[in-house]
View 1 (cartoon, rainbow, N blue to C red):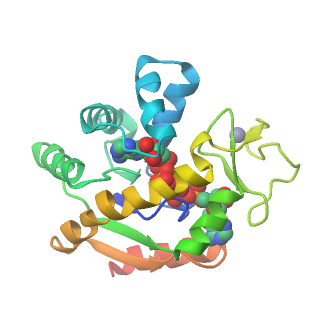
View 2: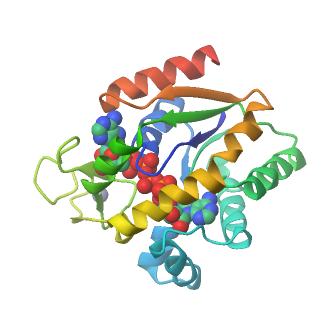
View 3: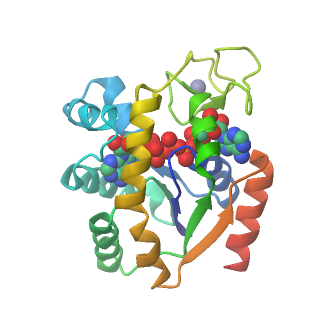
Length: 217
Ligand code: AP5
Ligand code: ZN
């Protein structure tokens, strides 16, 4: 299956993607995680991306699209993938369509996670992620690690993301509304959008998402 996950910052895309990818046996490809891995390794790509991310802006399409395509070209993505955080504007959506068309492939669904803005703010405020792997995500209240400040998965130190401070979060939400939301209509026109509520416990949302994907709602 080839799935795109869309939703505002803090909706729980990364959290759900980890479970959905495991259930569906496809790789989880998060452009945010790829950028953060580049930042922690100090690559030129990471250095370029960081200034945009810290300001809550999108990293330029040229850089992002190349990075996403390189990842989709890897062997483990040949049978399918779950894209998290990509595409994020109409240009990226069109380039993804062209990429897939060139390989005679199509998307199966665009899973749209709906969460009210006040909940998103609470989720982001308490989010803590792992220094070793930013796909290991916790929350100080809603998804506590067994030991405070320590990743359950790999023992890494948990910290607050640089772009999770109030000013930047406000900017990211604004960018989501202006740049990213229009891709939902773009995919609605292709009859690919499956919208679910992302409220409730993490496992309830996963169940809802799996059900909706299986029914192709
Ligand atoms: P990215 O890393 O993609 O961030 P985002 O889209 O803002 O999404 P988040 O990671 O903030 O939230 P999420 O929905 O994954 O929520 P999570 O599961 O962590 O992008 C960061 C930046 O990179 C961008 O701003 C941009 O600069 C750049 N970038 C990335 N992709 C790009 C692209 N394609 N083009 C250009 N630039 C790009 O959950 C949030 C919290 O809530 C966690 O603490 C979690 O434990 C908790 N939680 C999750 N589910 C629940 C639940 N059901 N109940 C209670 N708490 C929950
Ligand atoms: Zn970890």
